[in-house]
Amino acid sequence: MPIDAAKAVAAEPRSGEISWTAKDVQLYHLGIGAGLPATDPDELRYTLESRLHVLPSFATVAGSGAPGVISGLSMPGVEVELARVLHGGQSLEIHRPLPAEGTATTTSRIAAVYDKGKAAVLVLRTEVADAEGPLWTNDSQIFIRGEGGWGGDRGPSARLDPPTGEPDKIVERRIREDQALLYRLSGDWNPLHADPEFAAKAGFDRPILHGLCTYGITLKAVVDTLLGGEVGRVRSYATRFAGVVYPGETLRIRMWDQGDAVRVAVGVVERDDAPALTDTVVHHS
Image (cartoon, rainbow, N blue to C red; front, side, top):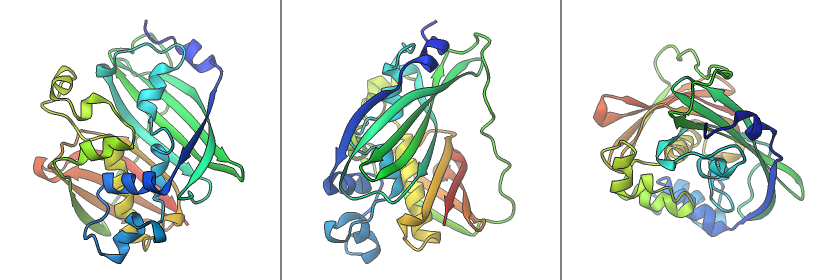
């Protein structure tokens, strides 16, 4: 079996150093659709270095830009084909506001391997700290088709009861045709998001948008709509990637304000609100 669950979980954590600049933050923000309209003061918070605020989801690409989907496949006990891999979910805990420029130490390990029958799920946990202390903890759930069925632990259910009542806010965000090409410049070079031949090999009609791009677009919508644009209020953010999004489509983002949390559901307008993100929660101050 290409995945040795015991070996993967028992492996020593990997440590490294990352750094980022305001330019990296600006590029990430542009990659998730910030800057429209270009002279809007609310958008300049994301694009102009003299007043730059860092959206917490930048943590998923900070430094080397290598997200869990890629780096998790190089861990001990894991040997799989990239074309069989999908990003299943993402959770992020913010310990304090992210600086626009910084250097930090990362510690990554496989926290769990779950047997879902027809697939395996790896949980890659990365903890990041700088000289002043912890910055964030990032969990990537990596879904690997065809690698389950060995009788291992199925793991906890990530499903939440759906929010009740009408959403407090609904916004739509159009995905540019070149959005994936721009977003990948932040470091996710998986050809699934750019190469039509590779996408076809993976079972898709054409290259798909990065799940983490949808993740960032959604958090920005929540911050801008319900948190007054205050990025520092975000405490944690978790989601499950429920379906693909293609460049050129439109996201419909529905939000339920629950006090210190916002429940979110994201669907694709052109495909009858086909789910893109589900079980999505933003906890905030």
